[in-house]
Length: 77
Image 1 (cartoon, rainbow, N blue to C red):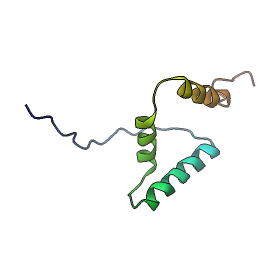
Image 2: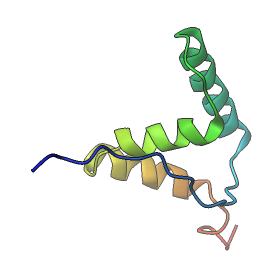
Image 3: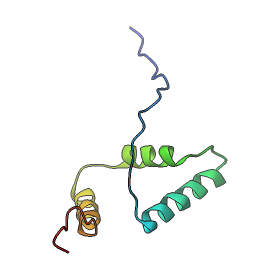
């Protein structure tokens, strides 16, 4: 039995709100990939970050840092 090769798929449109520093990080990552001669898009940067993310303490720390500045999680401020 031969393993199937993953076929390209079109994703679904989503809306994400990013802080200015997050958008700047996406731009920096896009520039780095473009310098490697690759075609790049914001959605591919987000997808690559999701693929690179691993559950664990480092991810939990990053999540808590993000949540600490998200007004949806700090409604009392």
